[in-house]
Length: 518
Image (cartoon, rainbow, N blue to C red):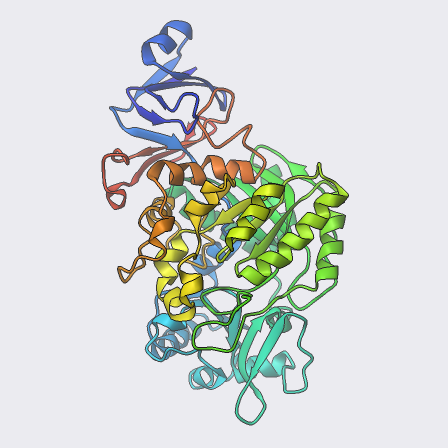
């Protein structure tokens, strides 16, 4: 048995919130409590003195796109933080020159709200620097993309193209596509991409997992997994190659296609869990495609509903009948109503079905929170959006929405289970400590406070990033708190987070299954 002692352990277990020692056997916690009592009652083989450092359960990012993070670290140009179209052009030119063998030039991460021009780039902006190869330039939210003329030609996108339900192709002044695709229309281009090989997937998954580990994340939900990636995850798991715990959500309805993918087989091992399927009901708030009941600020638009309700219900019911949990992206209040209508109907078919999830829940009404509480839906949301997209929200939302934007405190006050996550690489900062700080301060990068009444406490934020995520993922019997019988996944902090500024705290050690990996 291994003992850690002289530690400041915050267990996130309300029955025993604090301890100074833990003992492990194999991969699990045997006891948590007082050092002297544990030492006298267990046969200890080895021990580690943590010299008073603070210990928390391993963080569980319940919504982050693992392979897309890895893709930005390997094959895709990262444009997060660019401040002008000129900078995009410069980066694209350099990237294409360094990667002459790429058949497609792909880039992701620009945010027009922080760019000098304050607008989306068009095909002409890309054609100036790359015209001989197809270019796919994706906004940071991943719900909008710009293609150059070569890509439009290859994808057969023109003024006569049939646009899929829930999508939009923007046109120029003379009625031709200007290169900008929105929501499900992205599927018109995605199907022409190079098919990622197993070896490439493995490389990008491991690159992403390495980044998570540095941040203290021991478990993560990948919420948009296509069938080929799902098979790679299973193969890596069987070969013992997954360094952290992965909860993989199978996409059922792909962009640009109303024909559902087959429902996968459920799968569970120590490192991989497949028991949830994913749907998208609307777009992103920062790009004004989230579906609202009222118009955006200084606009006549209300966003985009991406799903046909009948198609959604039938696919969700078939998944529920096979024992799957449903996770649905819904940000705007119109989309939230849409999803709750379907969820309530699903539960009328089977009240004992797994409690489903709503991903994001950016602009719920108070009545919608009551509906959510009544049927027990889990909410997986992203405080880091407040920090990184605050300017987008302030520029796009009328006060009626801005004053109740991502209302974390109200969710908790309604006794709803809330899970925190990042949705990376939609955001650049995937550190749980940054996300926790954003939930507490609700300050954006320009120092503005958004919906100040929705601040939460440090204890609440830690709970949402650990136990809340475990509950939302149906693994609270194994993860989420430092409790006897659960997996020995924990982090050791450089400073006491309860006595220091969060931004001064770093991750010193990361443990998974009672083994130190950092």
